[in-house]
Image (cartoon, rainbow, N blue to C red; front, side, top):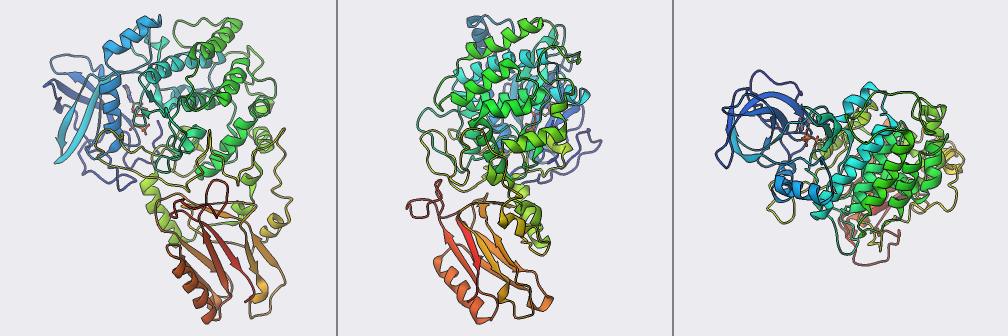
Length: 603
Ligand SMILES: Nc1ncnc2c1ncn2[C@@H]1O[C@H](COP(=O)(O)OP(=O)(O)OP(=O)(O)O)[C@@H](O)[C@H]1O
């Protein structure tokens, strides 16, 4: 499981330590529970706590056994009372995962098993004086990350298709109850235990489960980018829970399990959700070509069919689960892999045209090359190479990340990316939320179907190679002296419109005639006033830092005049509201996350 953000080790502690704030002011990690402790649930059932068997981004999971019984065949998931995810998860279970309902669904759909967990009990308990919430669930086996790690980040093709079918079953169940999962990934898929258990995979972690939308597609800044960044769907990037989003998330996972690397992983974009979002838009807009790039020896047919189908679904459309499953079961027949018996995680010789076994086209470099081809041009701004975070800003960033850092998948861990990964949900709207978490980016336009910011032009036809190194601006930015220090909590992206011109002619010292032009747009991923620090790195005594508070127009004019008075190079800062079309004139948008154009020019 992803545990980069966790402040405590997964191993069970011998002694209890006081609850620390997790990487968030809003979520705490739980107190350690001593082995042998007995929890009493709301129905007065008693559960003896065994060893810790897992730590997630929010809570800890212990093996548990019903008092009076011998087997630790249950687990207790425990989190401080104020934490949202377990609250959401518990309510999801209580409403939608009754054993009786699950059985009924299986019967109706002719299923022998279904990878849908259920809740055995729940309650509240004081641990070291801190009130905790706990749920009790059946205990399952290993999660898929173990097998991916063993197999060099891939799974046997037949197993991938079997898992796809099983996860589609679970989605169908959840969707039929009005909910989406929104966070499928290897770490949240556990094998069953016991005899025959390994034939079925279970989808766990309903901390992000929410009602899917049935009305208009309205981006919700409070939920934008929720999920695990590698797999977050385009809809989830916009904060809109949809059924097609679950399928898209599944698709990204299937691609990875088949041994290909997702372009936004290859390009190391994971720290900047907006870039990942754009990469996904570009990827899905031209899914045929995108997949060919990832699978140069031939796109596995069910993956091609499935992803194309997903790319065409509308946001309200109920997926045709049967159709999707049929693609995977046909492929299984072709591979002569029975869709029954234990799931097989041993890689064997290549059985179909996909790239499962170390194909040349999926080497890291090759994948990177291919990924660049399908990349949206705006993603490749060479600004990334020139920008660094100042120390003070890093401090700011740390506190921001404390609020946002949640889940990181193993691949993200390996890539040593920031813990800004899964973003937790605010608890379900219909229940009173114990600990809300808000993560914000600029509000997008309200799209009919799906919003794509104008700054990310959709590729038409075959995507072209990125213009990154070729643009004059980009080339100038490569000059080592050209550097902007800014808080990495604010993402920066190339944008054809707004630009910053730093005219070096203003410097009162002998200077070069170089001109640096920066094109960027600030994407502020938080609900806050924005301070833009424009710092010119020159000789020490001439260093000037200018702070601009974006709250009011008056502060903007104050800035311009104060800059002039001090005789420093004039810095003009234009703030404007952004809508999804990059049009500043449209009224009615929130002013909280403005795009900022900073222009330095000869006064
Ligand atoms: N029912 C279960 N049986 C056995 N192990 C489990 C069970 N549920 C969870 N685990 C283990 O605990 C780990 C964390 O679980 P889970 O994902 O539910 O916690 P979390 O706090 O929501 O984590 P995160 O949100 O960071 O993914 C899992 O990866 C798995 O190893």
